[in-house]
Length: 326
Ligand SMILES: Cc1cc2nc3c(=O)[nH]c(=O)nc-3n(C[C@H](O)[C@H](O)[C@H](O)COP(=O)(O)O)c2cc1C
Image 1 (tube, rainbow, N blue to C red):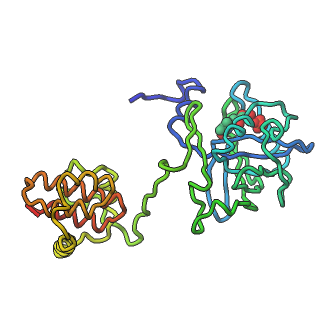
Image 2 (cartoon, rainbow, N blue to C red):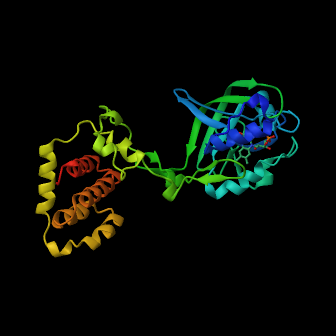
Image 3 (cartoon, rainbow, N blue to C red):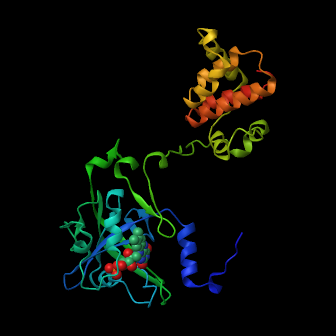
C-alpha cells in the first residue's frame, strides 16, 4: 500500500488521488447566467444528491488550480442564486467536455459547445435541450473550504422543477440503458453506465436476511462461490429445511424425460446457458461421478441459480451439495 499524508503532498497529487479513488462520479452540467445576462455552461463531477425532501443537490465549482481565482459558475451563482443542472449522457459527452474549456467570463459556452439553450420555466439560466434530465435550481448555501487553487466551494441547491424525457422511463423508473449516463473517473477516463456495465443487486430483505455469519462453513469454504455469491446467500430469511431440499431434488429428478439427453459433456453448455435445472439433472443422471466431482458440479449449479436470482433454489442445491453423497 502507498500511505499518503495530504499535507505532505502537492495539490495536483492529492487531486489525482481523489479523482482516482472516488468514482465513477456523476457529472452535473450546470447552466448559470451572469447579472449582465450572459449564459455560462460548465460540467462538474464533484457532485451528488443529498436529500429528497426537499430535493437537495450539491456540486463544487472549485477555485482555479492555476491561480486560485473563482470560476464563472461560482461567480454567477453567488450573484444570481440560480442554476439549471442537467445529467450528461453518452451522446453529448464530447460537447460537454468542450464546454469545460476555460473561456473568458463573457463567453457563452452554449455557443462554444454547440449545445442548445432552451428557456426554463422558473429560473433565468437556460436548460440544455440535449439532456433528457434537467433540474431548475435555487442556491441555498455556498460553503467554501480553503482559499488556494483547487479549494472547494460547495454549491448546495434545491431543485424546484424537474424536466425529464418520457422516453427514459421503464416501469416508472429511469432505466440506465434508456438514459445512458456517463461518469468521470481518473485522468481523462470516463465510464458509460450502459449494457453489460449495468447490473442489479437485490436490496436486502425487508424482513432481514440471515447474514454472512449464519452461512454454514461448508458453503463458506467452497472454492466455487465468490464473495459476492456468499453475500447473496446471506440475504435469505430462512435456510430451506432438509425436507424441502429432498423434495426439490425429487421434483427435478421427476422432470428427467430421457436419460440419454443428459450426457456429462453437455454440462458446460448448460452452464453457459445458465440452465441450472438441466445442470442438476445431468448430475442426478450420472451416478458414477466421484463424490468430490459431484460436489463441485453441484456447487457450480448452485452458483448459476444464485446468479440467476433464484436464491431459494440455489440454497437447496448448495445444501444438497453438502450432503455426503446427495
Ligand atoms: C467532466 C468534467 C468534470 C469536471 N468537474 C469539475 C468539478 O467538479 N469542479 C471544478 O471546479 N471543475 C470541474 N471541471 C472543470 C470545469 O468544467 C472547468 O474549470 C470550467 O472551465 C469551469 O467553467 P466556468 O469558469 O465557466 O465555471 C470538470 C470538467 C469536466 C470536463
